[in-house]
Length: 165
Image 1 (cartoon, rainbow, N blue to C red):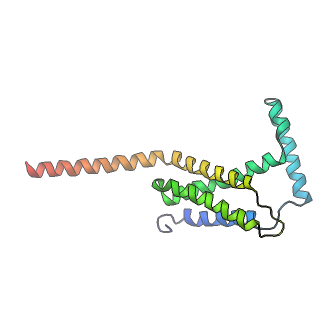
Image 2 (cartoon, rainbow, N blue to C red):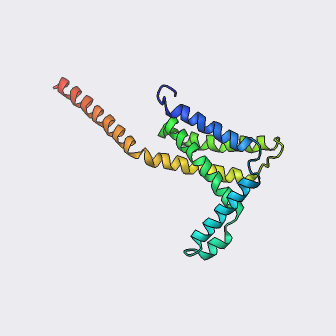
Image 3 (cartoon, rainbow, N blue to C red):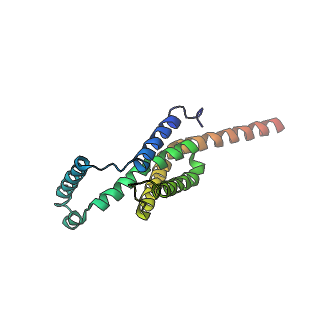
């Protein structure tokens, strides 16, 4: 895996280390950061209010946390498909779900951290979105490789035909 992807593999490991630090480290929100999140929420409500007033009123910290968890796992699904290949997309989905299960289980034993079923759902959704994005992005390369394979097969068949005639 490291030979095939000399940049992607270390990048994935670094990203996974960041995810581990964010999810398993000390609870990150102090008063300054919490203020920043609240300002961001007010800004998001102000931006959404003219277009979708009912949605703006329903935006809450829980929604923002859910969206952040989804966004955090999108690259995980994307990186795993790019590392494992399109054929093993299902393994990338399984790895994302297993990873979030391990994280939430570990959080039960870390003081100050809270394990939540919604985190499992949001992280898994993010991983699946990342897998889907990777599958979409790799369609052109997949088609090129498939066409090259077909051409090689046809050339081999043509060579066999010429040798028999």
